[in-house]
Length: 376
Image 1 (cartoon, rainbow, N blue to C red):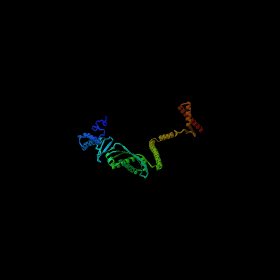
Image 2 (cartoon, rainbow, N blue to C red; image 1 turned 90 degrees about the vertical axis):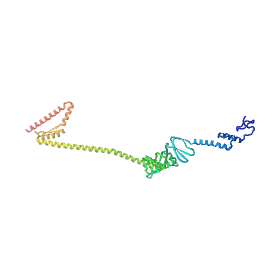
Image 3 (cartoon, rainbow, N blue to C red; image 1 turned 30 degrees about the horizontal axis):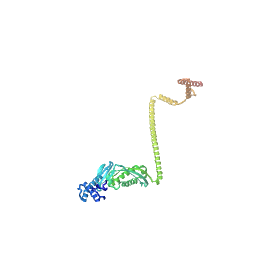
Image 4 (cartoon, rainbow, N blue to C red; image 1 turned 90 degrees about the horizontal axis):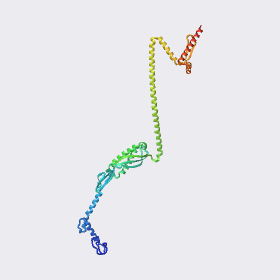
């Protein structure tokens, strides 16, 4: 039967109940205190104040255990932890399992190997007083966890302000053409160097890895006019390149022609000089021979001159000494007639020459005879 049913039974508070009324609350509290005092080593018969004092070490022990367990923490390979003890810098720890007293030490974890990125866009003035719109991306990481946590209240906001200041400083020292077209890479490098100098002065612990100029263009309001300027500049560059190409082609050709003419002139000069020297030497040799035999040398010179004159002549006029008539020999016609006869197979070239020679001799003889008869 249940302990609170009529008929009795032992109640859970350690007493026998034979009446039908509810259990006494004071008796229940006293029984509970006795059980707790038995865990603390008490005699169980102590007063209420003694029971409270015996529970205090247990509670304190449990709190100390919980406080110690709360001090353990894990640091990842990519992280570093900055430890502050009572608000003052104490240590910087690396990866692994660590313990610091809770409520005494505060731990700030920083991902030092992670490469972070920050993007910005803005309008700024160039050196030649033109407005340009630039968008860029800054890639950075944390080089010094202690400086990143302690030196600056908000390092990332400071990074944004320093980036804007460095970019305006570099763009303000560069013309519009350099910013938009030719010098974007140099602007990115100069901005990264200037930004790193600012961050080092602040002691931010941030290391700038790279700055990328994603876009640099004039404002939308003047874009059409600037497009015309770009087109005109491209036309100028194209014409300059065409002129340079023509110059590169015509100048070597002219130099080659001049060198060729120079070499031809040198060759002609050598030829004329050598020929003149040869003629002079030949004349000296002829003079020497003429002094030895004037008559023979004179006859020989005459025959050589006649031979040179007659070698290119196709017609010969023969003046007979015994008469007043001249004999005309058309050698070109005779040779042409001989060639036709050879084609027809009438004879060889030697036979043709013999026949022509006989005809000339016979004609000369007839001419001499007719002149003799006339004189008689």
